[in-house]
Length: 246
Length: 271
Image (cartoon, rainbow over all chains, first blue to last red; front, top):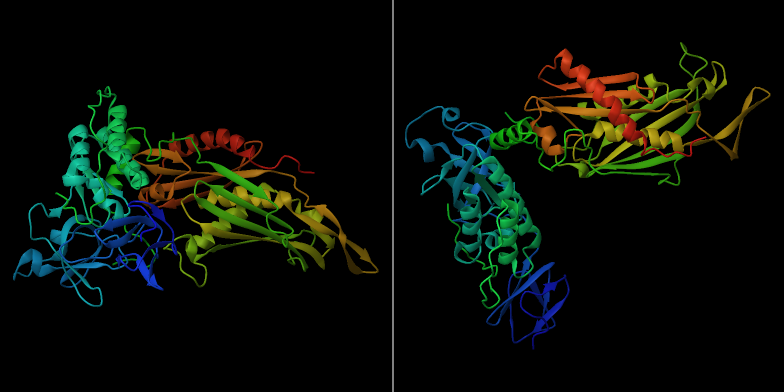
């Protein structure tokens, strides 16, 4: 027996389903009933019920790509703020190999980097790395901060949402899994992208978002809204594991 | 090295904000002379003789005024005392730590105090009860409960409102003894109104009412306190970059217009 619908908004303590369903993230079991432990949207996958929170902090996970800011230089590593309760470290050996060089010649405090989370240990020490395509230091552009749970929504199904923003604003856009977004392009286009991304964050829990984003983009760019081809209600949803691109 | 309690601002943000201001824009689409929404409420604390809650955008300060009878300073035996204190409480910002007041807190309190004192907001001579022995001391307490930039303007506007809201019990002298009649309350003798206007210099431009984001990337700032008649009563400069004469004169000129608009937020029913 299930008491809610997929993508319904729930509050802590709401009874979601009984024992024939499985309890996933953001839920707990009491007296054979599955209840929500968060404010968020229900996600029903087969028999598993989880709740995606409306707001969250980024918890580092191995393999994620994140955008971090250098906050400190130490003897053999950089300290980075990755928009998370846990700060990350980037070992000097990852950049220089075995060579010994001055760390501040490569990156300095205040630099913004695109990195991969190499390892997270049991005390949540976050090791970062720069090995991979597109990883490295950002120059120019703007930074936008969104709630990490909204990242899949911003990217959209197979990158549909983010590609639309890229195409319309002609901006480079990089989304870190930690909710930091880097946008570079024409300054006025950067502003448009910023407004659209903030709108997506605000309305990520509503449906039919892609259409509204398209309309907003056209409006901000002063283009005419094209006749919408009739197609069934777009069912983009916040897929838990959507790959972002760099 | 990281200085404790100071958030590091990525170069990218600093540059993009500088460029934005150079283009005549601001992150929240305000013009350079615009304040954020101001909300002012007085008499919010029933136990204080005067109080105000001021919000400028998300910045929020609670101001309380508490009178007490005490001895005057020996060099000014016939005037009352105004003392200002500010508390940057940790819930207002991740940069605020509990413990003894830091320099920002001291600066805020002193600037507010100077603005109120030098403008002659309160007729302190009327607060004298027995010359050299008993005067009213007004304690003004600023509690910063949310920090989103521009604390000084908020503090001065809130303090002004709190003082205008303050009612002190009537004190009489009977046989060289001070007798307080808690039933009879009189408003503080307010003889001037003064407000403050803060400018941040970003990308070579002076912008009014900097938000936290703007304050973090600004080169320098200047706060100007002004009486209702347009005379300057206080001035404070912060940040490491210089300001030239023209910039300061321009700022003073703009302050005159802006404080006039800000005055409208103060309660009108005084005295």
